[in-house]
Amino acid sequence: MRMRPRHLAVSALPVALVAAVAACGGQSTTDAERFCGEIEANSSELFTPEIGTADEIGPLLDLYRNIGKYAPIAIEAEWDQLILNYETADTVVPDDEESVQAMTAQAYQSEKSAAAVKGWLIENCALDIGPVATIVAQNG
Image 1 (tube, one colour):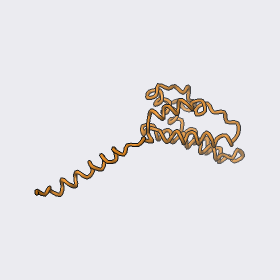
Image 2 (cartoon, helix red, strand yellow):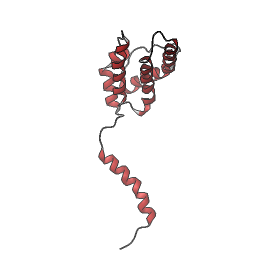
Image 3 (spheres, helix red, strand yellow):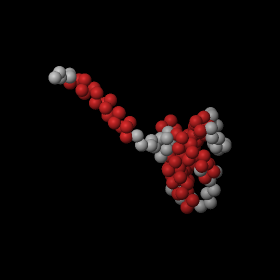
Image 4 (spheres, one colour):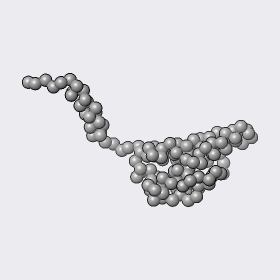
């Protein structure tokens, strides 16, 4: 019986681990097809929400978070910015100027992400969510 050199056995370990993980399969939480489907199914709630009271922000935030579980890596950071925008809005105290300013600042910071999400959805899902309102002009 011939012994294999130790370095060959060690170098085969990562390949075996990758193969084992791939064999486990399972659905990826970054499934673009699922993400696109969830966006399409919930587009009116996501992009033209009817928020009349502060209590209505929570369910919208939950919807963004749930759909965010399927966000592809290519757009995940931008989707997370949209979630942060609603998280910030959910903490606003209308009579507290500081919290209103924090929400306004976050809204400005998320404009680029909103435009990027819109562009990604058009390119990858053939889904146009309509105009994205921004204060600063965005490319795309």
